[in-house]
Image (cartoon, rainbow, N blue to C red; front, side, top):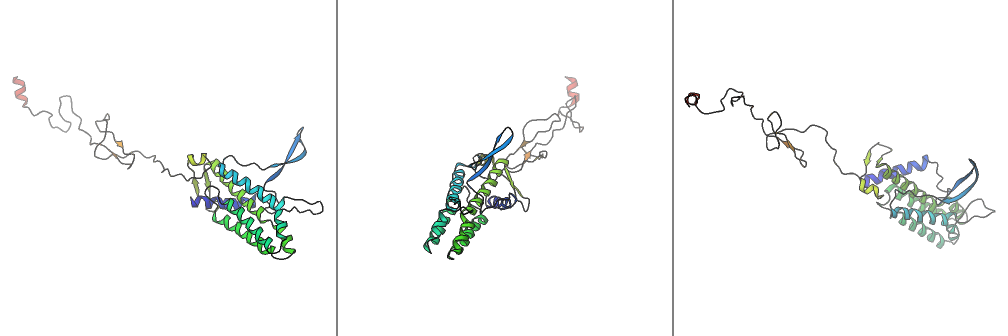
Length: 272
């Protein structure tokens, strides 16, 4: 299970780069979608980002809450005179010392909430979230300049995107029934029962053998046409057994190896 979570963490970090996501500025909670009329885009509207149905109800609820809180704390407000959006985290950070500690505690609460997803967070993603908070806290201690940098850095938004890409990778693994390591190419298959409920569970079924069953001396069942005993497979041990073949008899009841099948004297049978 740990190997599976680790692989998903690698895929999440890779997709964060390949999908060209701007984790400090892109809105993790809402997205702009085009509105078409007569085959042409007439305007854009803002809607909540969809959540994959392959995720469990617990993961869906946590992702939605983390997205929404990160948006309110980092990008909830917009001023016409300032091109940068800011949230409650910026106002709290303006309070010297106490505000910085309160802001860090809020960010740690968000990471704690994110770690309650099914299976928990990979160690790499959890460490990256904590490092974002530490950097944000250290910068915020610098008067004025630190608050401005804090409003642009947005540790909560970065952590929300980390959770987003991880759960997207998790949903894709559930959808495909397997997940591959982007570095080594190792593939882990998921069990059907866990995947159907959005819970990752590595498959423990052994590989089925396609080779013909072996025949050994011992107990078996059924007789084949050649006189031999057909083997009954042992499903637990993988061993099949068969009785030794009987020698075929000729039309007079004798054996094919020249030995007579009767112990009586042939002359005595003629006199009868």
